[in-house]
Image (cartoon, rainbow, N blue to C red; front, side, top):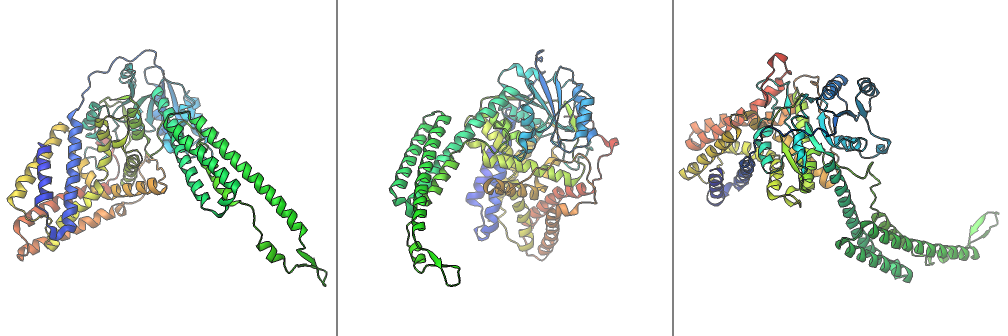
Length: 638
């Protein structure tokens, strides 16, 4: 119903309803509606294969497990509470604290309680750290468990978490088992929208049906073999990519060298011809799957020989120059007893033809570009993806592309702490969004080899949602434009409009109601629209990072409420939009009374403004939120 009615409505909007006299608002609005249609269709496709798994399989008795607790600057008591709970997990395992803050006090506490402690090795000094992904990759190299249970510092596991999840790995192709993230410090009205019952429910269950349930950073088990294969394959692919870039740089340098004046030198021309020939040969061998090390070795040898030849030639020329200069009478002693430059010395030296050093720089650039060693990384093999500030989605997508399978186990097996103030929540959401957009720009799932089309669309659906910040601006602007200026983005609010629009909206809401099966989703819908400045910032900053190398940084989500008064400045754009909506509402009613607006159009846009204001109201509640009161604890788990 949603597909048929939605396509019918949006197609009619493009073909038969646009007010071209106001194209500047009409086209953005119909584009936003098209985006929303695609969004709801991707959601419908997700829940179409919703998988409700039964009781988990029996866990193997001989499995070896490492429990990783990642931390950077969280309070020591919080980390140790999680670590001690992890130590008490029923099945045999090793518990490790992965301390990226390298705190001696935490090391001592871990040793006192018989818990393993891992921090970065010396190899990471002055190297890219890759935040949490680097922390996990470092620990992978010093531990040996067959399976890894990854927990954030605040995610206290249940004792039976391994009993409920290890059995899925009886299937040798399963690489990941993800469980929900649930927070115990969230009141029933969830003012910050921390609980995600729709995502950790129908959405992840639907992705599970498409074999696309992905890693969410914590409360998940991973197979070490799969991660190590991912790291090795990634290293090979990165090496091949570097070789291709090096060969392209080599050809570019040769072309540049041929345009220089020194290229007429027979020796320089001969060396450039040889380097060009070996570069072309290497490109052909690369396409046939030849050994990467052999390809790079031959090219490097040839370039090094060319450089040495030119250096020797230039040194010989320089020595000859020095001898010639020494034979010239460049100066003599003047009457004052001081050296005086001979009159013809400047003319002699300026007319001298010097050796062809210009080409040497180009050839040396080829030599530098052809290097394929990852000398700028602490470790060459990076099992967990480092292309994003959120390592989880990219890692899962790469595992799926290699043919591995994932499982979503729909049972709360760890309890965590959610942000307790608006600033922390916005920091967290921004990082999630930035990381997701980074993955989309660097490794768009729609073009990734190895993924099924269902998997591609499941990953793309999550990435697509963060583009909604731009459409939100249009949805806020359209009713303001009509009520304040009388500009209607549709040709008319006729019967044709309502008989298409209203059935589509009803089917859309019915889809969410059926898929949600009673789950409260309103808070999530509010924040998906109200946080539009955060989503826009995430898209723009991630794009600048990927395309222009601007750093993003990595902000660890604080686990305690941040000090300071109400953060009204944090929602300044939303306050401005809300004020404009209220002003437009007042102006619209006045214009209606004056006979300047149509009653039907005014009613539609007044309802629209009222809906937008109700959506925005959640932020005013969030600013005033003073943190969790234990008596308000919502004990209802997913």
